[in-house]
Image (cartoon, rainbow, N blue to C red; front, side, top):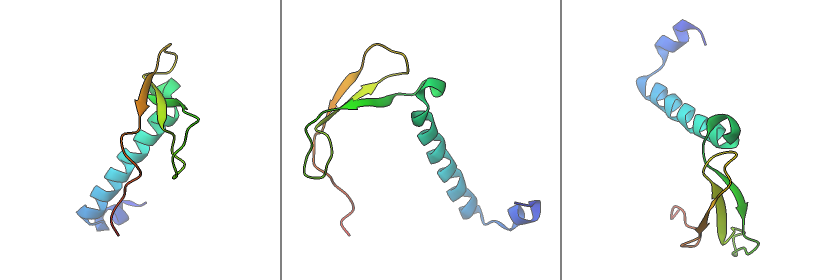
Length: 82
């Protein structure tokens, strides 16, 4: 993108791009926990609900740690009421 294109961008477009950038950075941190030190899902139960989601997952606080926490599902799948 040239400097001329950047000047033509509306501030709202810049805000959207910055928000998308932050979202992608968060995804990368969780995909590469050995580099970022971020928590990650390290396992799941073999029991699934009707939507294919596990009843519980194991979360490791950081790459290389010996322990993990169990998170249990507290509700079914929800989403916008379109």
